[in-house]
Length: 144
Image 1 (cartoon, rainbow, N blue to C red):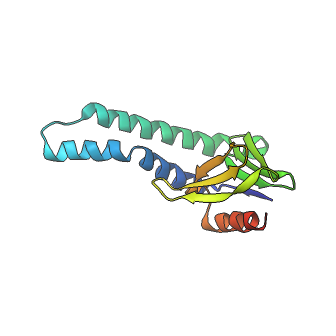
Image 2: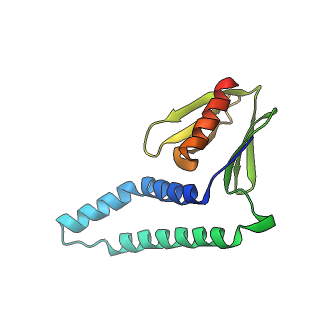
């Protein structure tokens, strides 16, 4: 079984992860702007640069990552051998003999953790996949 991230889910997940990574950066910048005369221009320009670069990468993927040469941006492959996380063509695999379970880290950002006995865990964003895809993944993993 192969679960692949949709384009819409990719956009939502990128925004969510970007916001989570820069939450404190943004919050402190806004507080400085509101409560002082100091305008964190350098901080704001860095944030704009990050947003613009993210948008350029997203547009590039939408335009050029199509057709027969399309790579899987993010996906989970469940086979008889194990579970494989695919990120832009790179694969990380946990064999079923090493698989020790799945958990959700409920902090900001939410993370799904596929655990391995050998310590080579796989982590990815909770919102990487749609709720239906997550349910399908969790149902399959519950059986294993």
